[in-house]
Image 1 (cartoon, rainbow, N blue to C red):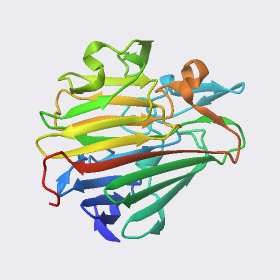
Image 2 (cartoon, one colour):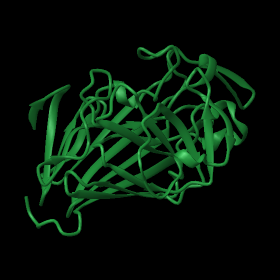
Image 3 (cartoon, helix red, strand yellow):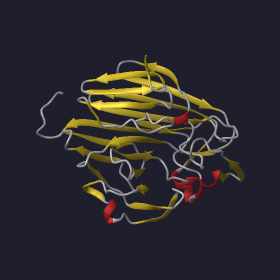
Image 4 (cartoon, rainbow, N blue to C red):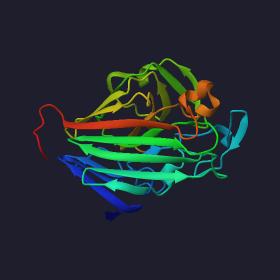
Length: 296
């Protein structure tokens, strides 16, 4: 284990792929392919996370409150945001259960308290195989009552002027002024990446549904590309673009919609019985663009 941002860190390497992981948040803090960063270390509590897990669900809860199973529950803000944001895993230290040169497994558990009514055990495994980065996240309900759970990954992908994204969805959610989803509808033309398109130069913080779990990103200036695949549990995604930062974009595979606690069918959140487990896996396959020489 080596010392890095956020405390002890673990360095993984295989072939042309190198990744650094922090115990804080079970976060990826650096990721390069052929020496070129494909994730940007800019997120998280101190701005050093390149990707972090969302558990026991992602995004915000309207009014910091929810009703479920005939009971009312309350949350407290857990970071700079006025609303409880992204769960607890990203702002907490995790324990290392296993580690080698190619993989690491970390766990995090919490009891219900005034900040959140959720009690659970979560595990995050980061594994390198060939030029593939695999992130596998699970959560087990350790509470006494059934509650709706969700999962997701929050990577900050490198963005260059010529970056192109290919991803398809059936439904798009507009955004309210409080950064919560507003209303569903067809995907607007400017946000349609079905055939591959550059990223728009505008604010974007929107959820998409009807996703087959696959996406492709190309970075012509870097000579590399990525094929992303999420398993069936992660059948929705968020796209996040900022106007003041054009060096990254976030494509976040999720099992549910933001604010699912207040949406029909809980927006995809899954009610878990005590002891029941929900899991989801995201893989990112890196390769050279056609015509690029192999090796660094």
